[in-house]
Image 1 (cartoon, rainbow, N blue to C red):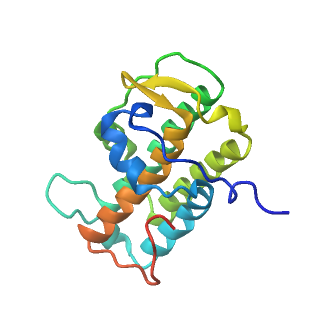
Image 2 (spheres, rainbow, N blue to C red):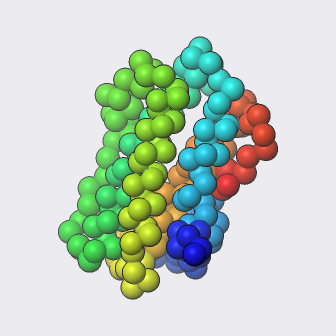
Amino acid sequence: MPDSLHALVLDRPAPDEHPPYAATYVAAAPPQLGTALATQGDALARLLAPLDDEAARRRYAPGKWSVKEVVGHLADTERIMAYRLLRIARGDATPLPGFDEDAYVAAGAFDARTLPELVDDFRAARAATCALVRGLAPSAWPRRGAMSGAPVSARALGFILVGHVAHHVRILQERYGIAPAVAVDARD
């Protein structure tokens, strides 16, 4: 029996389905949303596997996050966006507030944790997201709510989840100079 997650392909959300800042994330996600959701955790693990603790604490510029902080940010954002997806997919139209990503990273103490632990944390959060997505009815995807003062659809949140990770993988590769041991597509 084929995995229902891998079979999930959605039309790209319209610009009125997400806040303007999310357009970059939406554009970075492929329509094969289920496959991307299912495989990004493994792709991230492969990308970061060669790094030792010193390399994982590296920042590409002063005041920027370390590699560990980026991974911690990915796990935090995964949980927040999946919660938003749950609420909107279930028809809850209560406006959802934004969050201060820098404050979350500062409070996360990610540099004190090991990189494998942080990658496992992201993978656990993504596994929960995948379980949620597997259980969504097709009628849930067009539902709309509001986050950070802007309209958003459940479908857009799916694309934002995948595109956010792809965005940060690209930054890890381009700005931190992390090359995967095996070729990795950020949308893999």
